[in-house]
Length: 218
Length: 136
Image (cartoon, rainbow over all chains, first blue to last red; front, side, top):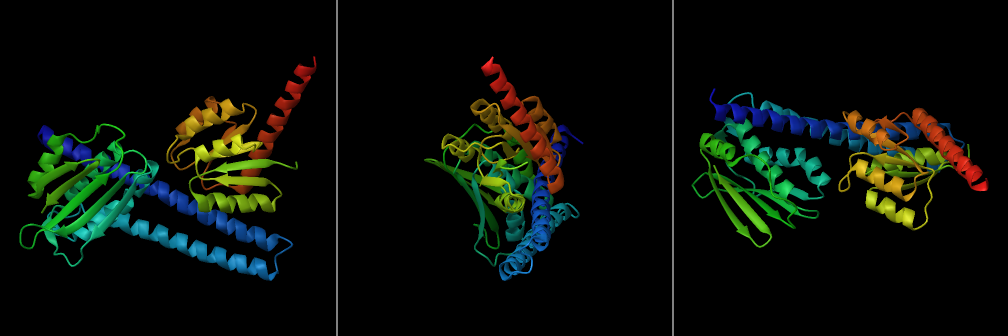
């Protein structure tokens, strides 16, 4: 394994670690909220107000909240599971909208910590592409994280999956907008170049006043 | 122990509001905010909590910096840190910087109440000690 392969491997492992750490933190939050709701039901049923209509109504509301929270945790688990399995086979058929949607959901905590809004959009009905899905999510995730580091509070990043320039191609645009916070110390460009080469992708960027759009063509 | 005023600072509002409701059922006075800077504004507006429950990982100001700011505004106020999984090192650092104690999420309410009461007892002891020294 040459040093570039080694760096790429290390980068991917570190990126997966970041995703897993953020997701487990979110699971912890979901469980903490569910535990408090459950405790609150027990408190209300033990209280002098136990049989009253208002208490029963409140308990029903709490039950619905528990259901919603459990649903959010299950969806996060589903996304994390897909994220982990994208490394199973390469190349594989990649549904870019799903990959980007999962990535954005898994990076939400990092964005919220910096008070930056992060969203995913898709024009829909796009063809699947044959590619290295694990490397794809690593490259798109790394670029997004680098942009997050450079944005100040109230900035925004939008990932859009759109038709590519070539017939049957798919492109991903990452648009970052907002006040600058810092110079990025993220992935060295050599790693991104290596990813682009392995993914057979093209990259372009168009910086503007307070706005940067990077585009990947697959 | 009566009339205990608790300020809960946690960006996970569903968690904070539900915990607040449970504490109120136990006769605590509880205020809730999702941001450290809002907590400072509440203190400036005259809120005098006995204990602050402070989430260590929040958007914006880091929990340890928020702790320092809270202690600099009112050194007698006790702060209990609330942390997620795998943040014990930050909590221990927080205790070195003046936090009374820390709790890991999910929280056990009985354990939380014991820690709040211990923190209030220490706060009131410090206040008595301060009054005695001022009287001498």
